[in-house]
Length: 452
Image (cartoon, rainbow, N blue to C red; front, side, top):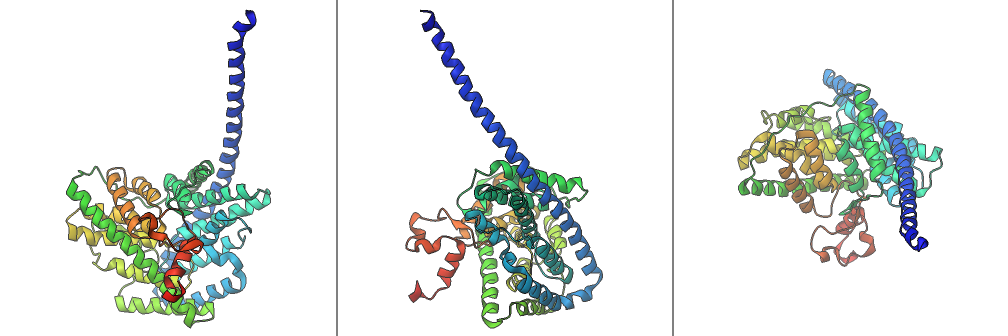
């Protein structure tokens, strides 16, 4: 009888022991990955802070010395030679990092960090139109993988650390820690997020942003947008705008690939492609008659978000062309800041046509074109809220999702895997295993009909 009465207590003790054991293992796991993610965040934050300070110097120097633009072809030739003869696998850039997350095979080259840092500064100093995120992610990825090599992490842990590196680099360089985390989880595959790396990604992004702020590097404040009175008509206008934002991302992606393809076929020696690209940028400046589209084009972005004064209707097309020529010819740098500028300036044009407030449409375009080009609608919706406030949250989501759908199976990161079709289930049927990545899909579209 006594034994029978003690049975429930015995079972409770066993259950408590089981639960306690589970919680201890979870705590150990959590602490381990918070520490490892934080290490990646520190590396990303320090590298991003140095890069942001150097970018400001490069931009100020170029603006004070307009003649530097005419050295862009020579600077490009020098950068091209360094990458050709010293870069090795470093030229793979962001795509190499995503590939290593999918299938870890070789360490990210340690030389990638200094090469992309120096190359991107040269691009900005002499007037190339490129961005910041590519450099920040590559520096973070190279440094983080170097740490993983030092402490002998295994393949799976190394994969998690590379995801953390993307989060740390993105969150630190743009000051968006939550979006940085989600971007790293979302960017690897179209239509799928990886939650296994949630803890290190969040730790890296938060720490990276804190490090940048802690060393005194600040991000330029963006205008905050208040509450928006949602109506069916207004939402319909932003659905239409989202469609146009998505198609614009396709235009940028295809233009960049076309320039790469043409130069690859006509200019066999790769450093010479950067020389040709530098000449083309100088020619474009002569055609446009101003230098608004060189470098990051931050003044153009600021004007768009402030109401669009002085922003011409075709500004987004000019920024698209300048950037496609710069990146398509091989200059180091990222696509994201130019995509921000394209989206914001296109937003100015659409706001005038659709009769909506210019700052609102410019802010939505800022994130939506990038959402379409990077296939990261959730991260970009969150980015919009972090940068501009929660007032237009619904419009950020609507435009980012619609733009993402209408960019189809294209993107600026060719090593992204296609996990889920954006359209009907049979949209990708018949393409077989060769359609695993966006790069394979691009090759499929470019192949003659008889080869498909």
